[in-house]
Structure formats: structure tokens, C-alpha cells
Image 1 (cartoon, rainbow, N blue to C red):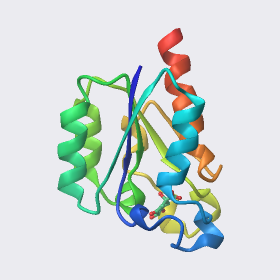
Image 2 (cartoon, rainbow, N blue to C red):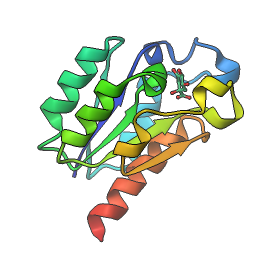
Image 3 (cartoon, rainbow, N blue to C red):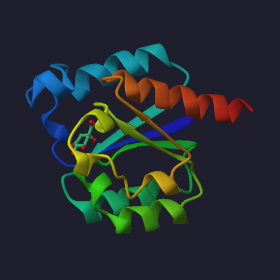
Length: 142
Ligand code: DQA
């Protein structure tokens, strides 16, 4: 199985960015443990702070991989372009958030991408990514 994890803006700063909310683990360290847990899966990772680059990556992988784990960061709450893109893909997309966005500011409660995604996982820290991988695995075994 081939899974693509995509992180949006400011998620390159995981480890140092607001550790009280996002924890102190870097994405690189987390990816090592994730890949070790799923040795049979190919787990690719991409991060960009630029909306159009996220769309380019989604279009590039969205017809060939088995599933996409997308943390669109703040673009979650603003981007119709990402919603349109997700709708156009063949691969299922799972929306992920490290924090529980519903416990936070009101502007984080609305997502422009949830309606185009297979499902949403939020609030489990970095483990939200693993739960999304599990969800894709489960779907694939159905
Ligand atoms: C986030 C939540 C978003 O509201 C925020 O803009 C982020 C990270 C999360 O993973 O909890 O950048 O997607």
C-alpha cells in the first residue's frame, strides 16, 4: 500500500511551534516511528506552506496512491480550491488535525474540506496521523 501524508502551512515547525497545542515531536521523528510500525506500507511525506503547491501535490499523487492523509493547517478553514481539488481525485483523502479544532477558537470549527473527504480525525496529537493510516488500511481491506 502506498500512502501519502501531506502537511500544510506552518506544520514544518512542528516540534517548536506552540508545543502546548501541537506537542514537541518533530514530523521527521514521528514519521520514523510510523514507518517502523507499518513496514509493509510505503508512506511518503510532503509539506508546503503554499496553497497552490499543496494542490499540485494532491493532483500528482491523487490518482496513483491508495490514500492521502491531509493536514491542511489553516487552509482547512479558508480553501475552496483545496475542496475542489480533493473532489477531483481518485484516492480517498482523510482530513487530519493534531489538535481538537472544536475545542479551540470558533474560526477553527468550520472546515471547507471535510465535505470532500472520506473522514475526519482530530484531537489525538500526532497519533491523529496513525489513526488516519489505520482508516485507509481498513477501507482497503473491506
Ligand atoms: C491544525 C489546526 C488548524 O486550525 C491550524 O491552523 C493548524 C494545525 C492541527 O493540526 O491541529 O495549522 O490543522
